[in-house]
Amino acid sequence: MYQNIRAYADHHHVALVAVSKTKPADLIRELYDQGQRIFGENRVQEMVEKYELLPTDIEWHLIGHLQKNKVKYIAPFVSLVHSVDSNDLLKVIHKEALKNKRVIPVLLQFHIADEETKFGLSIEEAESILTDMEQRPLSGIQIVGVMGMATFTDNTDQIREEFRRLKQYFDRLKARFFHESEVFKHISMGMSGDYKIAIEEGSTMIRVGSAIFGAR
Image 1 (tube, rainbow, N blue to C red):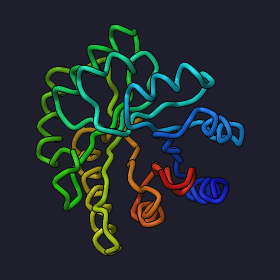
Image 2: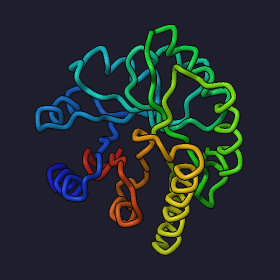
Image 3: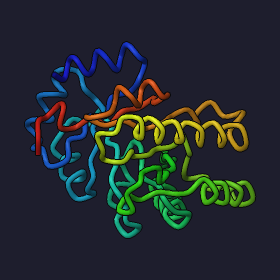
């Protein structure tokens, strides 16, 4: 199954994040041996433990909700934080990046789903943050795109509309704040059940777990 998904992503020039949360290091190693290099984790402690056990050329993506007091544990090595949902979190990532003499790439997470339990910014909140950053730049971070999670539903029309909205947010921010930026280019959307729809609607990065590793 992994090779099929990888081939599909490659054909559409989309990055595949293998979501390895709750999966043991030996299973990750098996996928690594097949050529996979990007892995996504939800929990900081689990990511740190796996980072210490596995090859150093793995790109670790933090895709779950990130608490400010845990940023320091992943700041030395994380390749991309997908889930930035507040100005305060951005500032903490910036501070910890500087301590580690790094610039940490991040995505702004948007709330596009019907479900209140999901985290994320509104477009107005994101524009306020970026306006503030124009006045007070944060040199320890690099905003490279957006992320969102669709509603957990069988209604593909609703899923498609939510992904379309995230693409519209990306385009709006690109035009207003990043029109000269080559690094603001990622739209992280699409998971095991809906990644094909996400790619059709402009995703550049899919986060696939159970379709690769099996049900948790």
